Length: 274
Ligand SMILES: Cc1cc2nc3c(=O)[nH]c(=O)nc-3n(C[C@H](O)[C@H](O)[C@H](O)COP(=O)(O)O)c2cc1C
Ligand code: SF4
Ligand code: SF4
Image (tube, rainbow, N blue to C red; front, side):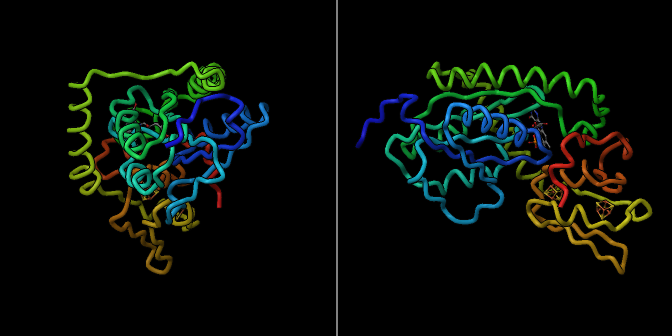
């Protein structure tokens, strides 16, 4: 087995595997790409929900995994994707997550899978970004000024963290193990009952039949039946909230939400126009 000595000179080309429901994680990925470029390190960005076969990593010196936090963990399909990555010989990996407040067991779960495949863990980075699920839980979405303020703080942290990555000053978000257990139990409940049981609804009077939701859903979970003026949701929703937040007329709402017309989080909507 090759014992990879981490040196910045070894970082010539990397790959980002990321998923972003509403643009926060994509924003951070692109920022990183720019910073790596300035150091003459090229980076390929790959969207996890678009990958269906085991990717080859032979061209890459390092791997970065980025995802939003769903119920104190990575989205389940992100974990499933990591399980199909090839076993390697000490390839360095970094992980980052965007969240409103708490990453919970996110880094613990990702680290477990990748270190079991012999990836060389080099640090975890947390980025506070605006929440994309406030409306779902009855909270008001935040103002544009607040969104900009949060993002500009994150910009500064990305630059600081990038320096740490390049200088190999490993940063690690740590949790007590009993807290991790708690987060994992909540996550089991979230995936088994909450995601499966939840239902999106749509208001046919508000829908202008633009088809955007159908086109941008990362799991092809939505079918627009124009003639019947109906929107059909199948059973493979990952609760990324993209359709809900980006529908131009707010026609999609969360069934159990108290305020169906609460403001949506659509700051990055233009990145998803198709
Ligand atoms: C279903 C769901 C669950 C979430 N759970 C958490 C959470 O446990 N902790 C947290 O801080 N943020 C949570 N969030 C907020 C998102 O992690 C956050 O807004 C993230 O930056 C969204 O990234 P994206 O735009 O790349 O999808 C949740 C969002 C959704 C949709
Ligand atoms: S994005 Fe909204 S308005 Fe457009 S088809 Fe979907 S529900 Fe209707
Ligand atoms: S139905 Fe909506 S929330 Fe569910 S995966 Fe598709 S875009 Fe995301």
